[in-house]
Image 1 (cartoon, helix red, strand yellow):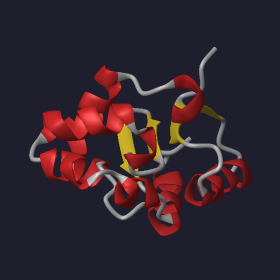
Image 2 (image 1 turned 135 degrees about the horizontal axis):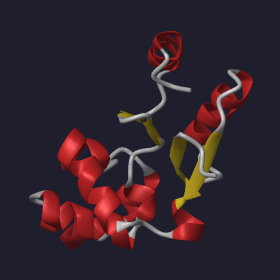
Image 3 (image 1 turned 180 degrees about the vertical axis):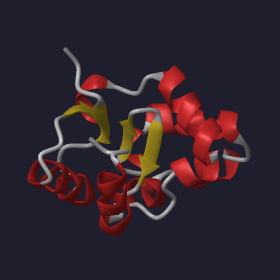
Length: 123
């Protein structure tokens, strides 16, 4: 049986490590989807982009984005072009993204996650 909470990210990402530690210490049963090993599901990415906006899901602050060719970076002008880059380069997806009982979270914010635990949204 799959966990009610699913965390998406990359195993060696420091922020994902912090998020996983938070969930484990809080006793939250979760499953982990590693973009590097399992790839990026285009439908799931579309849903995240629809909810959060492509400019939030696309991590332009990370090393992977900075290393991309300038032509590639300049080609990102809308959701479709951003998703193409994210599928090709999973490390450009903001991490982590968490699905929990119909509520999704992007990025790791321990204060917000603690509040969500108290509200029963993250369990």
